[in-house]
Image (cartoon, rainbow, N blue to C red; front, side, top):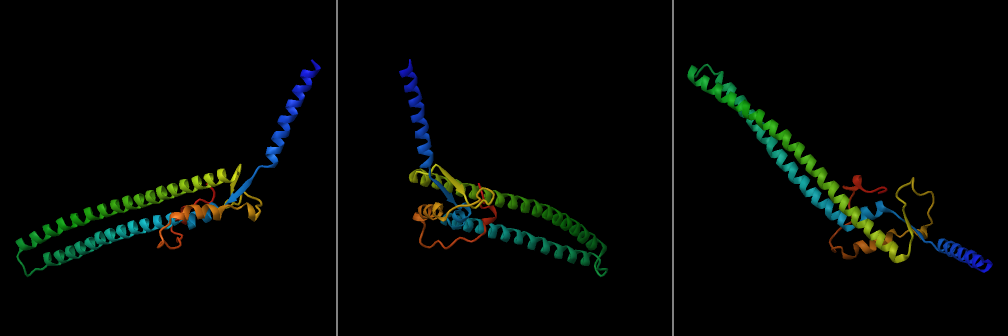
Length: 204
């Protein structure tokens, strides 16, 4: 009985010692998610796509606005002609009806313009959010892979000031993660701008 109890205590002590030893050897790393996001080459590519979509939307909206301006100028000209007493009454009545039709056309165009503008803004916001979410997923996977490869049990986002009080520089694996992510970057991809930075992950 005493031998069994001794062996049980010894086993418990060995388990505790192993746990303490594992804890002592635990590796913790920090990573700056904002830095990685802003310098990931795919962020620049996503920004370029969004810029092109914005440029197309601006052109379409300008074309619609120009069309409304022209219609309003035509409407004013019709009213001026309809008030010209030098022409017959029948001609003035026809011009007034044409002006009324033009006014309805302008109102319809304004409604369509407002609707299109709302749709475009929603689509651009959705594109930006979707692109950002995909980039964050890729970055988080890269961080996870790097952590597993390096034997880190915990990786903390140093970009979130509330999450990190102090981090030694040697714990930062941001550059190595960036190197991994940008390994397949095209040679003509320039440093990313901050267009998507408003949605960048300060602390996912």
